[in-house]
Image (cartoon, rainbow over all chains, first blue to last red; front, side, top):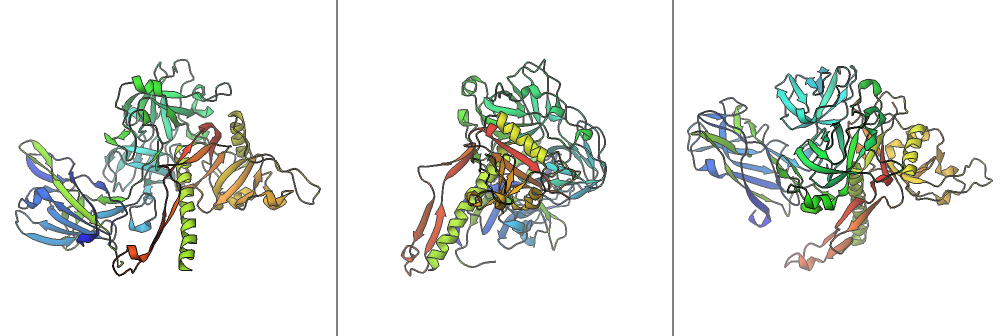
Length: 396
Length: 213
């Protein structure tokens, strides 16, 4: 096996842990592995040097054991894998296989088919989508959703709403009851006009491969330096040039290029957050921006698309000009005045799960994404090591 | 013989990969217009003549050059002249819907069909449609959850594929002697380093459509 090693690496587990002294699951991690690995081992360096814990939590319940060694090989079902773990306060290892929350191939090109995580998740029923600028979607199944997830809604014979078909970020979740679309900073300019009835939600697990990306616009304020909001993270940096395509149903068509000025564009001034930013065009006297209501459909939606960099502005505007989402640089992007350059952001890798039930154990084991532990008011993440390889011969 | 076959297959693989990358770049970065003239009750609707006219008008207003010259009318039964045209790049799934659009001219109705491209399906107004099995599709992206087909309507020099690192596509063959002391396995493959890029965003518009129900 050693002669087939492709790559190796390390990371610190991230996640949320609270309480006096306890251990919680880490957030799922995606690691990059060139050439698509055939096998992968992950080791929890921190927890290998400690006994098992009586206060290991999974999804808020104190019922988990801590995984220490993890193994996956091509052919194992997505989400599974083998695990060696330590029981309550135990110094010795026991072994099991994950039913879920283990390893899942990450291949956003879709070429790995069902062996990898789906690009678009399965349709899950919804019963209502509220008529609000931050619509609340009622559903009996919120599995897999976290704050920041991207979902796509659609109709299923119920009343229509204009937010169907548009990718939107999830801002809050009530487990297996409902979830909320959009944050306050990127809420719709106007509510969709009526509740949506029976429908579906699907998780969207991959973004457009090429950066910078076009985005649906949810709101534009009327101001000297107006704030523009997008339905999912924009990833733009100060100095980048964008062009709008605002349909008549959304009012503020003055932002569109005209026959007198085909090349009118706006420059990003400041990035407010992942979902909003300000621009350099004074919209004070423009028509107010509205998000299309359901009675206006079918229609085009307001959108923006990147056109380059206003280099002069980029050189003087504050900010490090690193294309980022959630504080993490978008893979393969350039920085500085080349932040606008077109790049393919795709990579092959593996999703390290947060853990799940062991097949024999039938209770949770914390997964290859590691754990976070709180002790004495201080929360620390485990140090994790991994090594991945490729097989020269043989198959599944 | 085997090497020749492998080279032929790899050539297709290389060019299809190039097409897929260009397709994904256009899908992710080009501005779009939803089809709205149809009656399938979805958003976007199926493609209609009014949608074609909308996108042609937009390209003309943006001063995009057409790519193909007109095909002059001739005194041949069942033919019709074809206007100078932009290209519309789309999925083969759309062919039935294209046939039903008002004013559609099949390529065998061109006065000079030999001027049609192999992948061409026909023309509507100032758009000539080129279809591909790997045309762009956004899954479950309509308001009714149907697949949305991206029809890239492009003018001349609207986008480009730029070679990186000073080389274009390379076909690589390494005889078995490089594999190991027993010379058991030859290696053959391709590589290229290029980036697709819109050169003028005003000259390319993604016309989004669903299939007629």
